[in-house]
Image 1 (cartoon, rainbow, N blue to C red):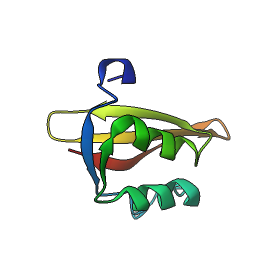
Image 2 (image 1 turned 45 degrees about the vertical axis):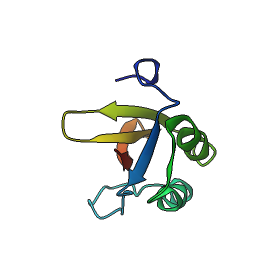
Image 3 (image 1 turned 90 degrees about the vertical axis):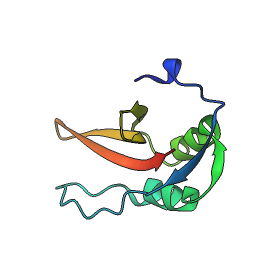
Image 4 (image 1 turned 120 degrees about the vertical axis):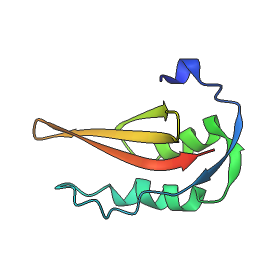
Length: 91
């Protein structure tokens, strides 16, 4: 789901930042992981959370809304490979 179809001003509680234990050949960048950990437990508009996350990465951030989980996805292209990380979930 794109940001255009998500109410970015909706206030949501952020939780479950990516811990980096999935065994990816490329670890999640330290700066964005730090911001995600800072967002843990905070309740704020999605737009503000996205702004904070964007300040920590050059990668592409997207909002994903599924039946059972909502999260911010980070995609980074390196060496011809696209890596994707679930950065942080929100309610």
